[in-house]
Picture 1 (cartoon, rainbow, N blue to C red):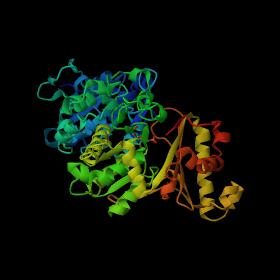
Picture 2: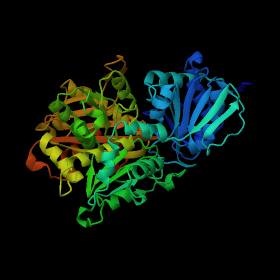
Picture 3: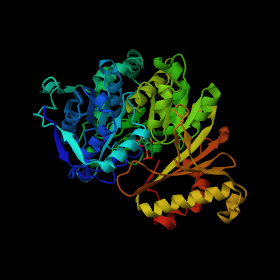
Picture 4: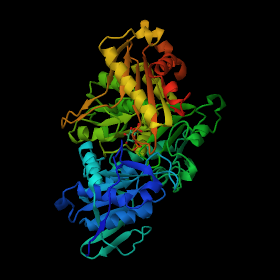
Length: 574
Ligand code: G16
């Protein structure tokens, strides 16, 4: 096998963000941009461990996915990897990738390279992404991604082997360099479905979905969620194919933005009458869900009703042991990212469970899971999951909700809806009114300036050195009692992650949090998170925007966002 050494020069912007390196597709296609990053990953791993190893290389099917897989196979061969597994047609969802790395052939995989920019749009003019997952099936931690970035800045060569062609569309083993390197094209649903069957009671779900008063719709947003939806909801549970919408994967996600939220999943939102509950008709489905480009995110809807991701994880945690076999002996602990609402904290408190508050990024849950401290976790960014894998899992969330619906409806004559279950939850635990504002594609300079100002103001407030009413008169009677930049010390390995979001906390526990997104490919996306807790049963029926009106006004005044960025309103509100 002749390894070719190709000379290259560094790019200075290959710093992985919240979840891997995401850039415009054209950037990845330019010169040696992709080979450099892949070689930097391999250069950050011990060569003796790579030698003869098995890795997964697969993606969400976006434009450039197949070409990138071939390029990566050649570089993998050049770096001593023995076997590459890839999904048929180059497809594999992120949660299935995690399952394959952990489960296939008793977990022999050394790791995986996942090609996705997740919920970001795809196509020649949009985004592409690459992330590395380690042998536990989870995204590489900051120690490793930091090393990759350092290597990328000093790279001078990459190693490759010229490989004969192989057919990504046909399952089989391709012995490309006999005895040295092979590609196995696999069914990307097989190991994942087998794993899900050990978690959920499939026969019970099959019976439940046949109820004449139940119907559902699943929106794959033209990402890789489609084939998984078809396999699991139709072939395994027996739902009709009419329950699937936008479930044929497209390289550009049909021109859409494959992010399952109230704005971008508009087809589903319309079918479920979420924004127009007055227009619900008899055929409006009881249950709706959507997955993002790589199917790790989920949005859960009831008839005319939106379940916030923060409420979703809280409801799942509260009912998991009763409704999902995997959790029947109880939960080890629960966790949420800092900006996610405290609804989960209320559940943990009542159930006597350990609760961990981590920075944004699924990678932070992995250590807790590996240490046996965490069962269920979630993020406000439409991510929910458990320790069955080390990624969030869009299909798992749907099956968890179906299990809850089946449990709650086991003896009911009249169907208990998603809305009923969430309202029952609020009446037990209280309601965390919650909203996130996204200001997308802002200029980086003013966004950074805003964050720096907020940090400075936070230190002054903490030091008590400021008359808060000078910021806004409401603060005289409704003061900020704590302001800081969130820092996390991993309880397992002691590593510290700082500057993870600026939070201002008010006298009643309400919060405003500001962060810059770490998943965009250009400019800056400012995220503002608003949260208010309400325990009074008489006040559970407010419109979210009414309940959060004061916090929204204060967020604008404290941050000076409009003056600094010129943005008068958010692009997306969830
Ligand atoms: C990624 C991470 C999530 C994170 C989300 C939002 O999701 O895996 O843990 O919450 O980004 O990050 P940000 O607010 O920095 O944009 P995904 O679905 O894009 O991989």
